[in-house]
Length: 356
Ligand SMILES: NC(=O)c1ccc[n+]([C@@H]2O[C@H](COP(=O)([O-])OP(=O)(O)OC[C@H]3O[C@@H](n4cnc5c(N)ncnc54)[C@H](O)[C@@H]3O)[C@@H](O)[C@H]2O)c1
Image (cartoon, rainbow, N blue to C red; front, side, top):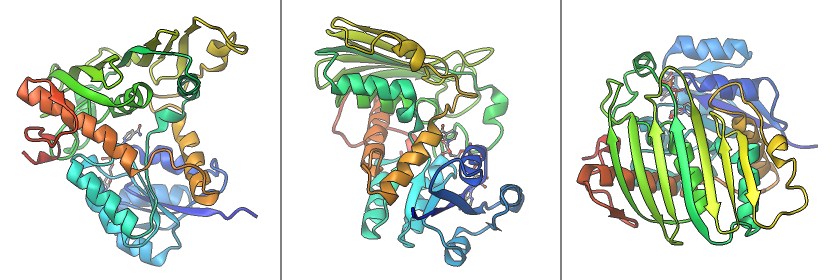
């Protein structure tokens, strides 16, 4: 019989709804929700009672009194590092929401703490598991694009001021960052995953409509080590509603474009050399999710369970999370200096994480 993994949540805010519904409603085979925790008792109580599991206001008390196999960190981005390092000592596996941390030093501390305590660290990157995204990756691995030419991601979402006003940490340098770190971090990760390692970036940003410290709008040009170029366009200042979350990859062998508002709609699947099964890909691989988070959290949790229970491949670990954080830090470094920034580098002017 397959062992049931016991999951506990730390942080019962907005995104906890998605996690608790999947784990608490038995939608992930081999996983169940056993406890939840939030510093604000009313929030913990609400989710705890909804799924009939014990709730706590202290994560250490939860870890000491409940049988937890995997703890899921859903706190504010700027608290992830502290929470993960504190939790690692229990030697349980840890899932942390994106972005894993805001500074590279924090990301390193998290990876080290988990390694030392034999805990697997998973960073939530649910869009990698979207059906059309998996299909695009498959085409890349099959070499169907040949020489890569251009990769583009666009995030044109709507986050009105009341979204930012929901909590004081949103849009701050110390705890969140702007559209690049929060909303577009999925797409930036995906672009690098598809196009390969980055050689350098050049970026500009502005805070167009939101009253926040960090940017709500940014454009980035990228030079990949393969010689291909890339573009990131990201904004939460689209009005009046979400328009697009997309990726396109162009190579000498063909073009793939995934659009929709949550990278969910296979818009173009066009190759110089066609293969059996190409016809129908656009219909088969387009699924409309209920919101911008997409369906990916379900597939993501299935992967986490497979990785832990069956020793399946660890696809999105701390090192993968660190890699896209390094790229985001480099983009901010370019915004601050007005210069092209070459990776590998150590941030000097990047404001993310409130260090500088
Ligand atoms: N994967 C996605 O698509 C996605 C979507 C939304 C948010 N997120 C990420 O999820 C994280 C949380 O975002 P949110 O919108 O749910 O924030 P939120 O402010 O709604 O919730 C955070 C909660 O964590 C609690 N908390 C803080 N420290 C704690 C501690 N030590 N112990 C217990 N509880 C603690 C807070 O009281 C708060 O209720 C962020 O990092 C965000 O970037 C990811």
